Length: 227
Image (cartoon, rainbow, N blue to C red):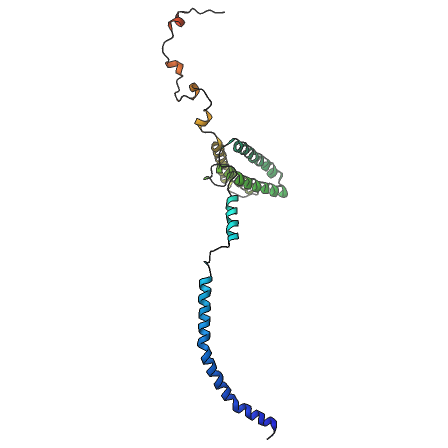
């Protein structure tokens, strides 16, 4: 028999034996493999934190972002009053300039004015807050109301129909928020009149001298002299 044929014959004869041995070995290793995989899954489960857990660095960054969103002014002190006055003047100027821009009809100028209103709103939010729940938040809201009025005016000048009522409503909202802003920095009555004398701070509408009784006799008997 040729060597090549002999080798082929021996290989074919040994192949079933090899398969049988391999199958027996797989049967021995399969339970061990399954146990190893199960232990790995259990360890991974216990070593994994909650899904919403954040690294310490991310938590710190979130806290800093929350602190940075706190308004600069939270009470009606002298500095806040000055900034509120400047801010309301900026709103009035922006509305006046906006009307001139709309009359001009230049698209680039209208876009630039819109960006200015966006910056004005952001400045108001940063200084006074963005909610009525903030002590001076109505001032920041006034900036947002001014931007809304500007947007409705742009829509009106663009030819959108049935918007006159919306423009009027937006203007009324701005006036209301503007007044609320002024009221938020107005000193309470007891603080505003703390410096005044008793006669001025008296809650009675009748002057104290009107209830002081009759004039003294010496005063009543004194003759008046016209000089």
